[in-house]
Length: 75
Image (cartoon, rainbow, N blue to C red; front, side):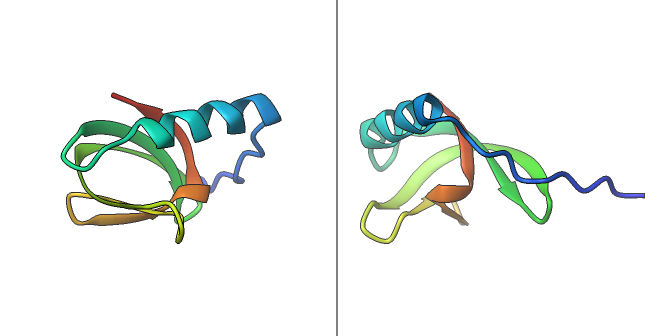
């Protein structure tokens, strides 16, 4: 049985911190991201291959993520 989790609503402070972290990311950096996908939270680590702030998309190796689904970033 799979436990589906609701998407967390981040506080203004959390959103500001995530925005700051996103703006520190550079292509070829190794980062760890926790994101919401398929009704669950997933954590991945890898090399950033693409980052587009206009379309709010980041690609870590071959995994494309919408920045609005990310709840945590570390590097």
